[in-house]
Length: 139
Image (tube, rainbow, N blue to C red; front, side, top):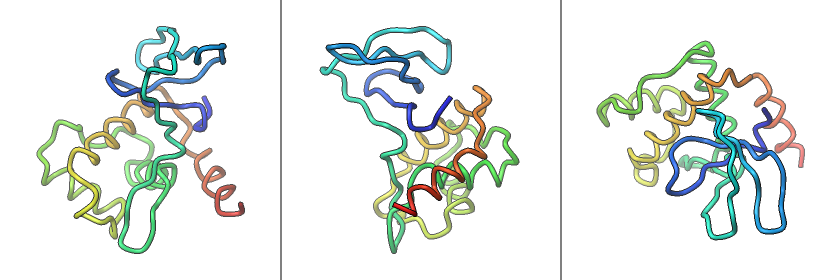
């Protein structure tokens, strides 16, 4: 599973891996249950590699945030995304100390933690994210 092929689809829970492309969209597989289905141009799709978290100085790519979370949790699941907002913000502050708490809402943190835990359950290799982050910096 490659990080640059993982997407989130608005209105659908979980994460999806892009399998192939069609004339009208893409075929994806759910990371949670393995079901395959088409995503058309009418769906709102976000590639995880294009998402970044605001800090006070810059924007940190989600790959780097996931790598920091994996380092902190030693590759295990983080706290539940259903925890209180204060606990989630406290955990996120440990992972990304200089995140901009005025522009990064609790709902954003919930989503990031939920995605991270989904990838952990799917046995995603977070060590590959160090390579992704290094490649982005070189470009």
